[in-house]
Amino acid sequence: VLTASDNGSVLSSDAMSISVEPNHLVLTGNTIFNSGTCQSYLITTKDANNTTASMFATLTVNVSNGAASGTFYSNNTCVTPITSTTIAATTSSRTVYYKNSVAETATLHADDNASNLTSGTLGVTIGPDHISIAGNSYAPSGTCQAYTITTKDTSNAQKAVLANLTIDLSQGVASGAFYSNNICTAGISQTSILAAQSSVTVYYKDINAEAITLSAVDHDGLLATGTLAIAMGPDHFT
Image (tube, rainbow, N blue to C red):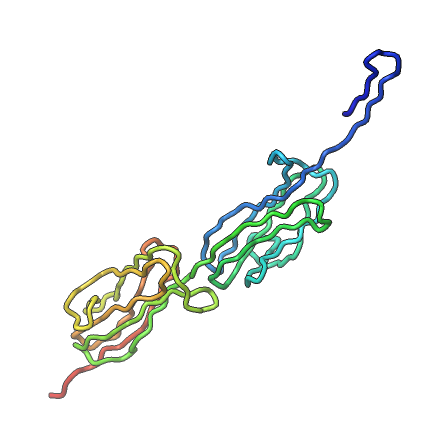
C-alpha cells in the first residue's frame, strides 16, 4: 500500500494498493542424465530478490530446447508432448517433463508467452543409455578373438560416456576367458571406457567348442547391458 500524507496535517491522506508480480522464471532439475529417460523439471516464478512469488493471473510458459532433439511432456511417463504449460493464478510453479533419445548437450528454455517475465534457462548434458558388443559370432575354439564394446544412445548412435565407465565382463557358464591383449595372455574380468570416449576393445578365447553369451555390464548399473551370442567350433580334424 502506497500512502501520501500531508506533513502539516492540513490535507487529508490518500492511499493506493498495488500488486508487485514476479519478474523472472527459474528452471531447475537434473543437468546430467541418460538418453531416453524421462526427467522432471520445475518452472518457478521469482521476484527481483530471487524469492519465490506467486502470479496474480495465469501465466502461459513456452518450453523448448533450442536445436536439440528432445521433447517436453506434461506427464511423468513422457507420452503427452507439449510446447507450453501454465502457472495458475496464486501459484508459483509448474512441473514439466523432458526426454531426449540423442546423447547431446541442450539448453532448456522456459519463456513467458507474453514476454513480461525474464526467461529461465538450464544447460543439460545427455549421455548414452546402453552398451553393445560387436565381433565374430563364430570362431574356431582356441583362437583369440577381438570384441569391441561401445556405448550408444537410445537412437543407437555411438556416443561418448560422460565419466569413466567400469564394465564387468562375463560369459555365463562357458569355459572361456576375457583378455586385455590380442594374444590372450593377460586375463581380465573388467575393462573401462574413459570419459569422452565411446569404445574399448577386449579379447576372448575358449578352448571348448560351445555356445556362449558374452555380456558387458555397467558396474554401476546405469547403462543397459550389452550381450552377444557366439559359438566356438572345433579347431581340427582327427
